[in-house]
Image (cartoon, rainbow, N blue to C red; front, side, top):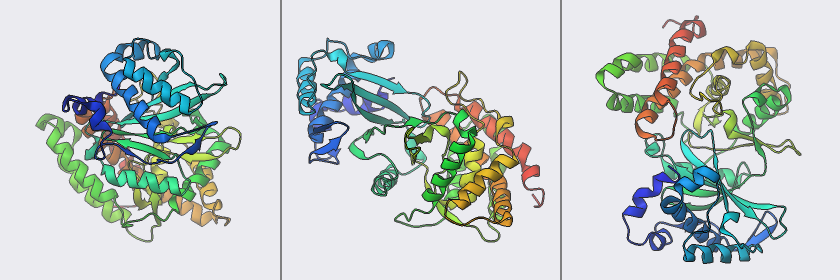
Length: 408
């Protein structure tokens, strides 16, 4: 359902418009006039019109949006006036409501994401913003306030889109004029090297708050939640009763010796990487799962994500046979280390390569548990439970190979 996750907010108040723009529920981040694209607008008025648009989409045009992606001319008069007024502030005169175009963006597994645009007065360019509606129940995975703070901090570091506004079940983000990478792009040596360098820059960020490793705590929390959601039969099928011991053994074995800890993205799949075609600048987006962790874990996650194509007809199906081979991973790691300005030694590359391979095990457990929980709380059309099965199967398959030097 388009914007389904704000349905409860609308039902619980007699005046959605009034509640939305109260100081408690609506928080515009920028009140002064700022440059955006080719126009200048008052963002406060823009936010108000956008969420009038959202209200309209939810109540009146769910099927129309899904069918043709346009807002029909039967919109309420109040909405027409607000949208036309805001368009006027941007210097754009909207004559027909169908000039507002809503594009659902595919591939998101935690939230629903939409692009909303309309033509400028010049007729050739479009104003664009990105609307992110939080997936139902996903707060079990992370603290939303922490995630917002991370987003704001990343923006200040120049690492991602600006946060333009917030509402109870989502936010408005600056639309980055770059393209999202495809699964195939990650196999391109040039693009892969650019991603490696950007990931190193990301890991070096000095973020506020504790810098403790979050991986193991998160795994145990998610295991507990998975057991609560699963029936006894499902828990047995997924082997949940023995995963507590597996997590403890992994933590003990993988935490031995020196590990570099950095601020990790933890979800570096191709859909969370954007590239400006002209400048070749890489931008990492979507920081819901970001935290301090061993950098080898983040590398492992990125390599594992190459098994996925979330834009295929079966987005939940993983093909681990197409994951990067040892030479491809070695090349990525060499580019990753070299981006800091120092030519890496063969020993450095090999050590990080081995560490990343071992952390694939923790990564399979991480996303396996995520899949179980998502299958019970998230309404996005995706076979989360089958995804979880594949992750756990890969864990048991890789366990001996990845940790052959360890006693498990």
